Length: 177
Ligand code: A4P
Ligand code: MG
Image (tube, rainbow, N blue to C red; front, side):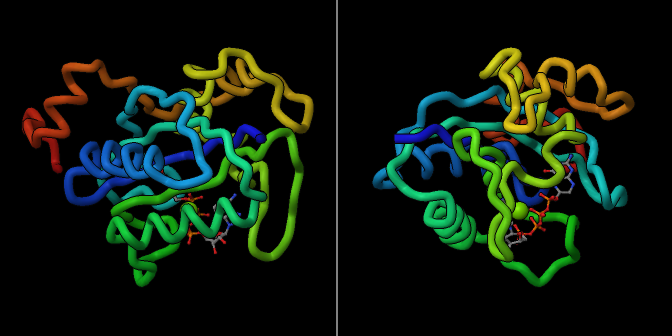
């Protein structure tokens, strides 16, 4: 069994409900055990800025699958949950499941790069990861807590349990969702 960390993101069609549904779906996947899940975070878009805020979260699973098998499962679950790949790279998406870390492996093939290549500079990933893992050491030897403090100017808001429930139920306080 190894531990793996999955980043979840959505900014279309009730993203909080999408993330919550994807977490439930991960919990049902054979050969995977869902171990920890972060809060949901409302985050400003990075890369392609002209799009709605995202909801992001991170989950830790344990699995007997290999890294590439796990990625195949994630892609299958994305498709099942309505992801299509005809939009812009980095553009709006119904659900994105990224394999952030697979044990402490460093792995780079055309199909899969772990750690996820943009993990280190993205607070929307680092903040929920730090919530569930504290100051873990990343496979390159860097310290997660230090990486978090190095990410400045990125709007990332942890949602309370009440705000999460309201967002899942579609009560959004006038936001753009
Ligand atoms: N791939 C290689 N390594 C991995 C990995 N570790 N995890 C390959 C997942 N996929 C990996 O992915 C493109 C290709 O990367 C796949 O063929 C896969 O085999 P994709 O999911 O089809 O496309 P994508 O999601 O558009 O690309 P990517 O690279 O995952 O995009 P990002 O980097 O996730 O950026 N702003 C905020 N606030 N929150 C967000 O969640 N997300 C993005 C998307 C941009 N801005 C954002 C957010
Ligand atoms: Mg992706």
